[in-house]
Length: 344
Ligand code: TYM
Image 1 (cartoon, protein in one colour):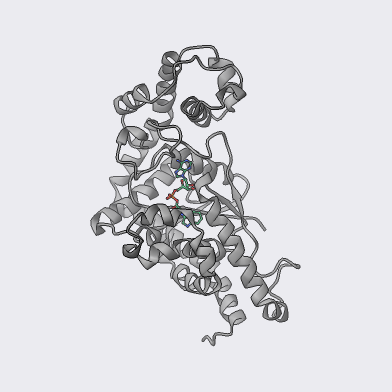
Image 2: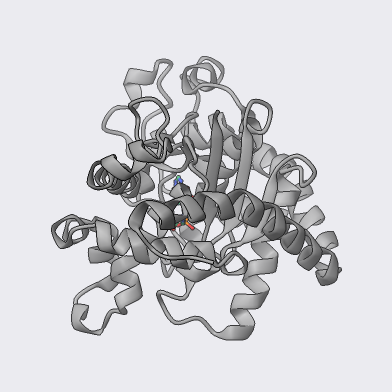
């Protein structure tokens, strides 16, 4: 059985990296998979969040999922804190994960910065909670941007160690799937032409909500004029666009803009270059603005419509949480039996 799980942090407005690196793939996977999409509010508080902003962001990310095309009848959308199994399994993952593994996580080093002594314990344990998110549903596929791949490797290590540490109990209870063990090892799915969308100001840095310059990113809720300004100001080099993909090597800004165009249009970079290769950036940028506005404006409009009715959004999350809970409960009960906990 194939099951998809993925999530986004409700820490600020979603940007084009979130959209092309993850969300467009989430929408596509609904055709072929059972999908669970989470708003990871427990991950968000690993760095302090203003409570009113957090609440607003949870609803906004939910609205973005729906507006982008996640079908709430088919797929599950919910916020993490409503299903207590995430916290419960995270503790168990904490006890399986090794300090040496956690110390290798590059995102912690980036986010903690120089003042590491002052980072929260939650920020350090963050990838272990992420492993719990995925394993709680025995998810087999996890569509994410490239920056999450290391966390997926850790998830596989935790799953494998759990399967090994409790191999006897898993076999005794007949809870293994073949010789695969109890937890399937989840596959990261980084697809499409833009698994790593870069900053519009610097083609060597990823597009990120923490970049102080708003000109570095396109937000899903930017209006047409803002998108046009940001694309016009986007850094480029002096040469014309190449006609073949290998001509993008060593030209990170050009490669990024071509990847963004390809991602928005749903084609390959090679196809974009066959159309625009040989031309100047000005013409390509004008086409990119039109395309970005055409794709993003309806999403922003739909988000505004949804956000006008927060009770409806909360109902989506509540219904999703119930359905998620129904999948998670028997898996968590098995985990407790395997470990040797006594339960009611
Ligand atoms: P988050 O909230 O930082 O990002 C959400 C998704 O967007 C992708 N992404 C990008 N993709 C391409 N280019 C970019 N510049 C870019 N920036 C962000 C991310 O790769 C991600 O797929 N730890 C996760 C949230 C999480 C999760 C999970 C994901 C928690 N539990 C379980 C999958 C499964 C995170 O912080 O994503």
